[in-house]
Image (cartoon, rainbow, N blue to C red; front, side, top):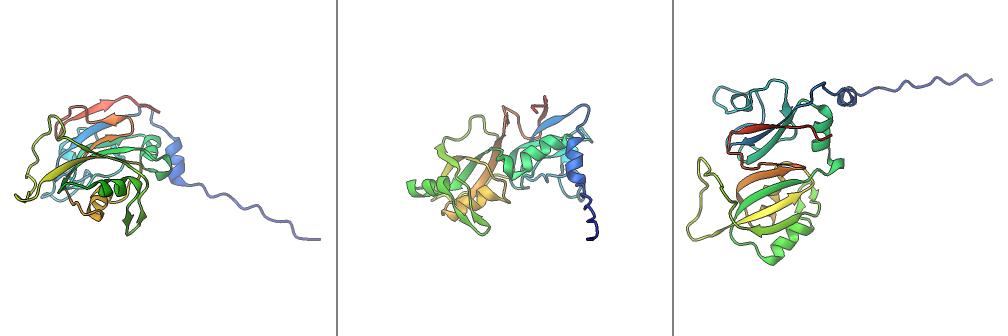
Length: 206
């Protein structure tokens, strides 16, 4: 008679359990992160962090924004919202304004739209088009280094991935390095007139 088989106990994932336990009062905070600020609350005394900008201790960044990039950062205390923003399977769109060196050709724009070969694979199709300088754009401190003989161009890009320094790598791959990068939107949220260092609370959408 064969020995009875033991049922394997299912190992629960602490991360998945945490996502199911939603806070009683979900909080979403939008911040226009200034240039030079780290996307974290702790750091050395010489580093600029979120601690001096966001007056809440119970929210955390949903995704990252490089120190040398500016714009919209979503912070929340809700693991479900954070998961929807950061998990690639949800393909949460992110909108960027990129000031690049030179004037991109039609071929370069098509390559950005169709997918660019990077060292971690080909990027997903993206929406990319030329744009005027964003209205009411704040000056960057310090200003970008422009070469007098080379013009610059503003691009608007909407991507659904979140790879490390993805937009900068994409424009560099087609020959037009990014000089300034601003994230203008994440999913349903936008900067909507916020100046660097300003924040506002938003109602939960899920």
